[in-house]
Image 1 (cartoon, rainbow, N blue to C red):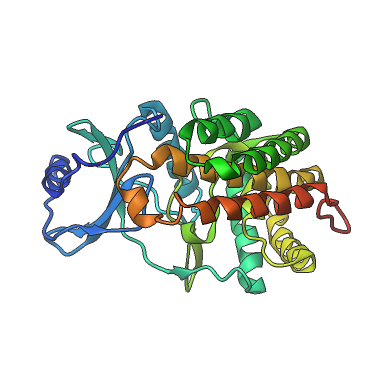
Image 2: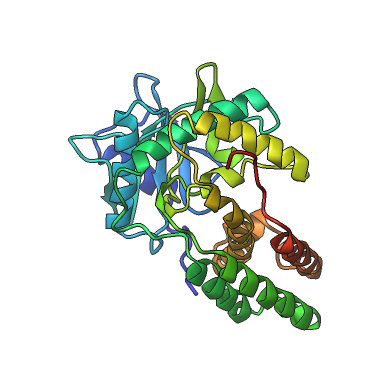
Length: 325
């Protein structure tokens, strides 16, 4: 289990790193919401605002980060609205005293409204355009969505962490094993493309000209539905309406394959299990106990048992289906 944290990443080191690229920083550093990396807003002498992301060491290789950047540039060249890293003297990935970092133009916006059907259809068109470009080639360095990493390995991380209270260990690991078994059996994607990978509300900003993505840090190969299902919420009927709305826009630019709908609950299971493992793995980073104080408590693990039982029920239900698919 990694014991790395960002203790050595001081404000002076960040400022020195930024100025090593040729930028002149004329402000302090405003920390933005990010746990996996460290992200800060600043401005230069001309009061132009930027955002810098210092990547967590040991997470991605340099080749994987560069592939993320290349994907951003490819989408940007296709006039898709996302915030791509800046190039300075032809370089977008910088290194300073053991840290790799990138610099982005600062782009604002408001939160995407998941219950707004007009915005959902717009998001469908946006994702369809992205996937049409993404499907033209594959990642060679970035990983794929796979049950081995996101279920079996995640289970081993949780087991080895010793965070599950002894009195809850049997019921927790029993239902976890059952859920992982069913989800692994159900996750049989027939096709995979390059994905945003973490298409949740926090990674989508909305302006008067529509949506844009602010982060491709989790991009990887996987089934297209991975970038769609996290925008669904509410009961089954609400999700069907939302899905139909999204796909109405999506199919204008890229054909959605109906055989991906049965993957939704296995992908949801991957996210749920991987999230628990992520907290276990990162707990030695001081930012995690500070921001997730409820994690290392008996109540949390009781809630996870209930949540896993609900997820088992969802896995056993017929998948979402729409007429015409």
